Image (tube, rainbow, N blue to C red):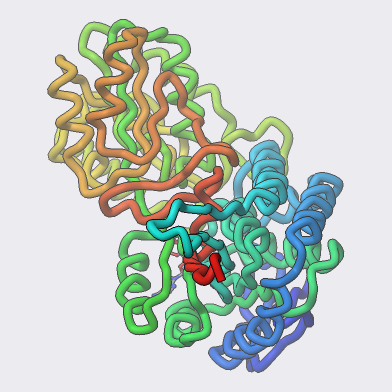
Length: 481
Ligand code: ADP
């Protein structure tokens, strides 16, 4: 089924821009083209920046309550259109409809949250060392910003950046993934209807991501870049940002450990492992990538996990009852295969799954691997697929060193009823997000972000809006004149 032709949204106008050709958006469940999109060029990005530049001063000086209202109206429109938005998302990304609906609600929650934060951009007054002076701290929007976003959360990864940007008074150019641009265009439609002034938001997408990004990175007028994607691309952008001294927020790769101690609630740990592993088919940067289970409960845990995952239904996410959709593209399936074959060759046991016979659609079945060790690729790299790799461990000290033995530091999970251990691990695990007895910690009011090679900056929460604000210090003299 075709969803139709979409256009780029540049400076408040739906347009083919300077595109000489179109590119196809493909449904990963059927490998059919669902839409064609003009393949944006560098000059289209430049036009979007010019448009943002023209309106940035007025938008920065607009009243916070008015910006908040636009965000609230947009959130409401998202909720009213959840069925349509979820369908588009499932067709371009593959995740089951129920998950797509969940993502639309999650994406809208950032609009609600930052509508309120817009009203709380407070400054400070600081006692001065002179009776004749006063010291004030003001907050101002950083100016034109840009977001480069991935395909795995086609809506939420945009609103998590766009909402604080708009709330703070920044304009934004969004360059979504070329694999999932339709949800981004749907969001732009919603903001247009919600009354966002022309030029404040542009959505520009093309297949030559490095060329489009380069225009953003080289333009001094763009004062901040927020990126979610691979560590490899994040490093490129960080280097490029140096030349114009742009602020950067980077949400990069993860390699999440999921640790189950013998004193944990085992049923809850299994349920959380399934959700944390299988949400988005395992294609998220916070997916449980290495599951560590204490030896006394190891065999039981593996059995219970395999039973739960074997009961999951794989198929086209538009169909009822399906809870595992396709991966995003053929290369993703190849990577998962490579990881599983490598693990098996090095002695891992396949409990369920482990082979993909799919000829149409990029499917890989839920897979549980037991007796995994640290020589295997599954424990060294992000698998980004529905493979639960379960490693046994003996002591708390040992598992902390396993968990930290990676360059990544986004999310870590652990299950225990020992309150002392909850705090010991919270302090010792080198991760930005900790789920203690919780496999799904992401929420709009909490700070999301990583340490080490997982990135810089935080999204969501009261901290998220600070990434879009500059601090200005006003020293006011002559008080006694
Ligand atoms: P993922 O592994 O999640 O696909 P990527 O880092 O490849 O992560 O992609 C995330 C986003 O970065 C996408 O919008 C993609 O188009 C864009 N991108 C890919 N390569 C580059 C690059 N060299 N410069 C800037 N953006 C890029």
